Length: 292
Image (tube, rainbow, N blue to C red; front, side):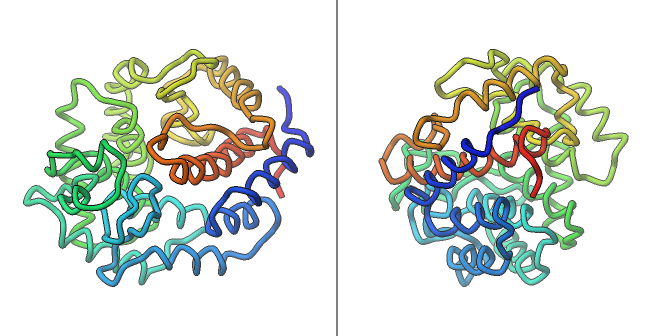
């Protein structure tokens, strides 16, 4: 097993300083320079709207001001990095999600309003606004992790169990959302049983070639921590090979590339910065980077 060198971390710091928005600069400082949480929370709060949701380009593919469910998932994942989910933030997010939920309790990734704003083509041209496992399952899972109770979370949990039980095929983004749900939902026997059933299905849509490039997802995209429930989907050898590949993939400018958000240079650069912080966190979680 190799370790990320101090030089690699320094070049990543330079990449973040040159390219990242303030939010991701502060995230890097918190995770790798013993920075405080307060500035990260303040920066993230700038993306929150009065309705309790998030927008304003928090997700680089959604540039509009209005709140979108996918941006709320992004916000909760970033808040999860910092520790306990602030109670008032969770409550306001749940109020927003209640307001946009479909009758079955699910929420779509984006609302019809995304078609009238600047957004990546897959969202600008979206025509299906029914409830979906992505992001409903991920949102419900994160709320369960932080014991954020509420009627919407319970409806979303029921929606997620029903949809997961009916799955006969999936895609990588949906699989990530499902595994987030299965990681944190209280019914552990049921979660373990569903993961066992879904394991071949998930492996079929995750690229197991550590050196493959392009718009693909690798094991570490779904099993981003050795304690994650999705870790058991992959062998030790597969995980180690992908960790080696992740280290090799750091570019000379210090950052990691991303196959996503190529629709505008700004979105691509922002996504690269987010990806760089995330990849460093993955490497640290698996022992490839010393803890602070």
